[in-house]
Length: 172
Image 1 (cartoon, helix red, strand yellow):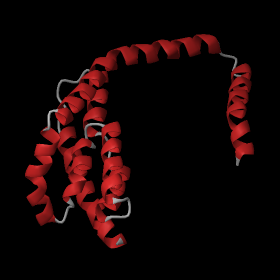
Image 2 (cartoon, one colour):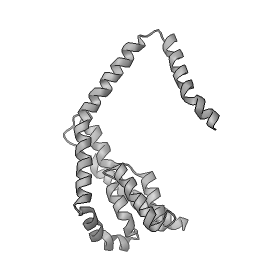
Image 3 (cartoon, rainbow, N blue to C red):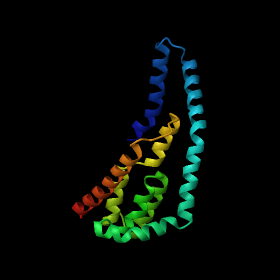
Image 4 (tube, rainbow, N blue to C red):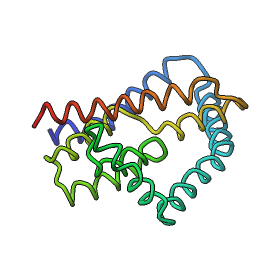
């Protein structure tokens, strides 16, 4: 396997160079044009990304996450959702790295083979960072309204949460 890994990246570069050589296009201009577009996109999206990261950190540091999870715990117990899954389920629509930190903490406390650990793993694999994705896409196209995208995304997230708990119960 290490033999394949050692030659993979040079092979990709070699194939790219051969394709560029035989394409009869001004590849340097195309490359620079792509770099300009990427830099402009980064410049346009950076304020949105910084806002999301700061908001998530402030919410967690202020104790808002703990209060929200404590308040929703009885409802989750009634629905069969492990309360220890709430930090992961709450952070996942906002921040992928925050959800990874939350699932790491869940694993260290409850273990990856617990009902909450399995459900969190399924949830991480079956859902996405809704607010991040929507804000990036809608900011890029300069849309003022998201229409049904946000409510439908949250409905799918709730479905993923319930389904991940169902899968976890089946696996135990």
